Amino acid sequence: METKTKIIVSRSSEWMNRLRTYKVLINGNQVGALKNGGTEEFSIQPGTNSIQCKVDWYSSQPFPIDIKEGETVYLRVRSGMKLYWPFFIAIIAGVFLVFYYRGKPDKPEWLTPATLVLLIPGLIYSLYYTTLGRKKYLVIQKDSKNIFA
Image (cartoon, rainbow, N blue to C red; front, top):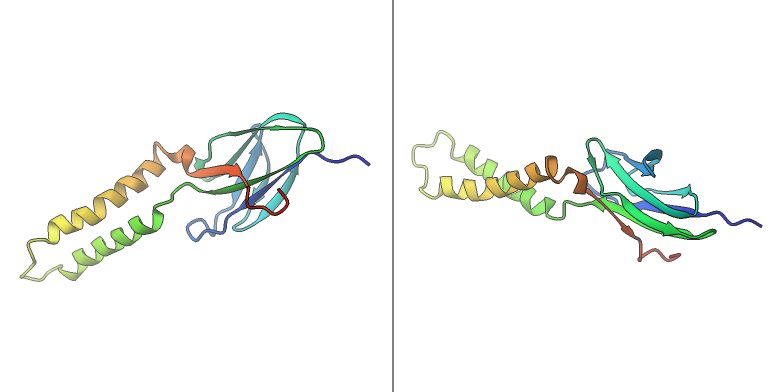
């Protein structure tokens, strides 16, 4: 019986990318797609291969993997934006402050600095992943938590 050489790629279930499908590329060719929380199996040639995932204009760094004949490798892909929720909450709080005090004659002195402190870091973080960090938006790593690995 011949055993297949394959990789199994799992995707974390994430709120931020829930509606978007990740394209899976092996050696530069699209071989499939991963839905939110999904797992897919791909047959590959033994030797050195490069795995990459893409979503819209964002992607992961190519993940090199050396695989032997008949071996199965388990990988996990997730978003690289670790601090998404704290920055998202800070942006919402900053926008809330602006609209809450809008048109009121007695605006507190701390409103402008507090709004800037809440908004600017989150906007810079988002801008980084939209421009310079777009190829680090997704992260591929070996799935050490998989019970079959």
